[in-house]
Structure formats: structure tokens, C-alpha cells
Image (tube, rainbow, N blue to C red; front, side, top):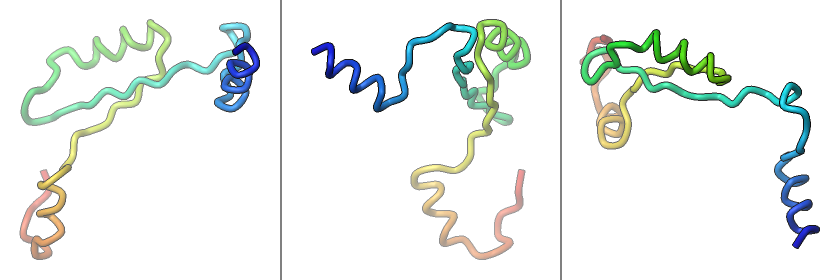
Length: 81
């Protein structure tokens, strides 16, 4: 079992080392601009950085059926937000 555990650690590059040598984990914050927005997004990002995360803010876009429907829209039919 110990050999298998070591094999997994090496395969997934899960080396145990000094915490100061480790990369910061990345936290992706999904931001919304029209509905269900975070009223304190700036404060959330500050807190996440203080906790040791590298923060990436991403905007929500079309997905699922909405993205599929966009394929069939005529060019220029929808204006960007």
C-alpha cells in the first residue's frame, strides 16, 4: 500500500515539501453583472487572497441550451451587454 501511495504521489506530482515552496491554490470566483450579484465581491476577493488563494474572477456566459441556441442565431441579431 505504501508503494502504491508513493506511486500516486509521483504520478500526480503531489510532492510533500515546505509550505513556503508550494504554489498558491487557485480559486475561481464566478461573477455576475446583472442578476444574483455579490454585493461585497471586492471584500470577498480580499479575504480569499488573505487566506492564501490566487483569485481568478470569471464572468458567467451562455452555457447549455442557451449556448446551443446561439449557434443558430443570425449574425448581428443580438447585441452584447
